[in-house]
Each structure stands twice: as C-alpha cells, then as structure tokens.
Amino acid sequence: MTEVGTTGSAAQRLDRDDPLAHTRDRFELPSGLIYLEGNSLGALPCGVKERVADVVTREWGHDLYASWNTAGWSDLPERVAAKIAPLVGADADEVIVADSTSVNLFNLLAAAVRARPDRRVVVVEPTTFPTDGYIAASVARTFDRELRWCDPEDPLAAVDADTAVVCLTHVDFRTGRKYDETAITAGVHAAGALMLWDLCHTTGAVPFDLHAIDADLAVGCSYKYLNGGSGAPAYSFVARRLHAQLDHPVTGWWGHAEPFAMQRDFTPRTGIGRLRVGTAPLLSLVALDTALDAFEGVDLALLRAKSLSLTGRFIDLVQAHTDLEVVTPLDPQRRGSQVSLRHPQAFGLVRALSARGVVGDFRTPDIARFGFAPLYVRHVDVDAAVEQLVAVLDGAEFARPEYAVRQSVT
Ligand SMILES: Cc1ncc(COP(=O)(O)O)c(C=O)c1O
Image (cartoon, rainbow, N blue to C red; front, side, top):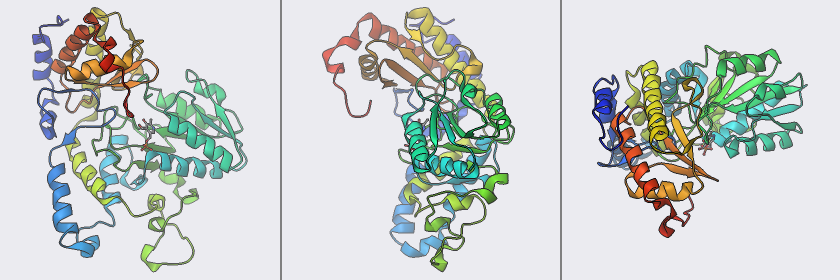
C-alpha cells in the first residue's frame, strides 16, 4: 500500500490503468480541489453551461413560446428519462423525470397503498433519509394506514401478510451501507407486498438492475451522481406490468392523456407519463439532459469496479494511518460509493479538510462523509485526501474555533 505523503506511484499506476480515466475530462472541476461530495451535489459536466445558455438566449429569449414545439420542450421529461433508464436496468417507457424525490415518493407510496386496499401497513426504515420517513408517515396518515418502522439490519422481519408496501433506500445516506436488493425484493414479493426502492445514492455510481430483480417501484434524484445540478428533477420508475393499475394521488394536467384538450375530468396518460404533474423545470431539465451525456459509453460494471477500488483504497489508507472508525461496511458487497468516518468533532473535521481543499460533508451527529464519484474521482485524489486528513488529525485542526460555527447546510 502507498505511504501517505508520497501521493504515490501506486495510485498513479491505478489511474493510468483505469479504463474510465477519460471520463474525468467530461467535467469542469476547479483545479486543485479534491471533490468528494459527488454523493450530494455532482460536479458540473462539460457542455451544460453552453446548453443552458443556448436555451436561455435562443429558445426562451428569442423563439419564446414557439419553443414548446420547435425545441421539443413538451416531451423533454420522457427524453431525459430514456437516458436514465439504462443506468437502472429499465426500459425507457418505465421511467419518467418529474418533481423532487419527495413528491415522487408520495405519489408512488400512495399508489402502492391503493393497489393493496386490503393491507394496512406501510414499512419504512427508521434511519433512512428523513424525507422517506416523513412521506411514508404522511401517506399512512392520509390513507388511514399503519406506519411500521423496520429493523435496518433485518427489514424483512417487519413484513407480513398485512404489508402493502415496503420503502427502503438502497444505499444509506449516512453510512453508505448497501442492501441486497435481490433478496429483499424477493422477500417482499413473497409476502404479497410491493417494494419501492429509493435509489438516490445508487444511480450513477452503483449498478442496479430493476428488471433483473422484478422491481415494482423506484425513485431517485438526479443531482448527486447524475450531476444534473442542485434541484434538478428526480425520476420515478414503475414496472410496466403495474402501469394500468397505477392510481396516484397527485394528478396534474401534464399527466393527462390530452393536456391541451383542457378537459374537466382527469384521464391519465397510458403508461408512466401519467406521473407528470405540472410544468417541467426547463432549465434544470436541459442541464440534466446534457449532464447525462457524461455516461455515454460507460460500462456500469467498470463504474462499479472503479467505485470499489476508490472506496476500498480510502478505507485501507484511513485504517492504516488514523484510528478513525470506518462506519461504512468493509465488505465491498455491502457498500455503495461513499465512505463515512466517525469522529466526535466531525463537523470541525470536515471544515478543516475543506480549508485544505478536500470537500466532504458532515451528517449529524458525528459522521464525516466522503463520496467517490467514479466518473471523475481518481486514486491520486484518494491518497491526497487521506494525507490531508492525517494532517488535520495530527494538528487537531478540527478543534479550531473558526470551524465550530455551523452553517445552514452542513
Ligand atoms: C436517500 C434520499 N432520499 C430522498 C432525498 C430527498 O430528495 P429530494 O430533495 O429530491 O426530495 C435525498 C436527498 O438527499 C436522499 O438522499
């Protein structure tokens, strides 16, 4: 293993032999910055600025309303969804881009509850990203169902013949632990329930084959490993076999079979398009559309191999050179594309690292999180990040008063 301090030749060799080394050039990264925050806000892909500027100046600024038809604004959500579909093992007509993950969670959880009218229970995981729990609780309240928190280590133990739907996040936002999607989906199906996967920390870094596991429902965001920019719209997946029975509650005019027929009553589009709600956020959508080109020609098996190589190296170096607790599973089969470290002053640690040019983030109460976006993070970045981490620890820089002040986003 490379000695921290040499930013070493072993890492350079790994990067030289990396079949995905070229994809880093598809991003505009500030020079000198080690960006390990792609699990929160992905980096800026090349071409996005120009595309957004063109849409603003030409399509919006000059062509104005005509662009709805001449620039194809109206079916952009479907076209962007078609680029996401292969990243999650789905067909293009099973994915739609719309709204936020939170809104899509509400729509799909409610539709799932309606699809299982004789079952009372919605199962969700208590340590999941909070919005999933908030939304599941609201769905349970709205539809007079029971919310059941499962054991994060054994979610299937909470699933029984009264379960309508189970909602789990595939890769945990706090720990980076990855569930076995095949076994869990099969277990949920064996109980006759529907399974909804939250793929926010999966898509774009960890392959997930929705067809292979006979998945029912999924949601995911597009501003993390898909690099669509903050607030870029999320996506929903619904297996084709469920489209006809999908009765979702947020029925907006863009989900209507004929939005411009302006009919009084809601008639859903056939297929996934019924999950569109209101007017799509054009500028975010075009940014995402161009951002997804960064995945062109990328073999997802290679993406996973690179991700594991980066996280594995980071874990090895942290364990060799610090006494920090690695919270993320050491077993590569059980981790996503981030590594979380525990430290009593994790907030100060992250701030001190940031001052040294290494960007990670803090999750309360004591987690320092580092995301490894395999399209643009290199092995030399891993070595350099640990080198800075050791310096922060050696100098107790995490305890400096200026790093104790919390900002609104941590
Ligand atoms: C696992 C997970 N689910 C849901 C969300 C919320 O997504 P949104 O802000 O698009 O509603 C996040 C946000 O980071 C997340 O990490």
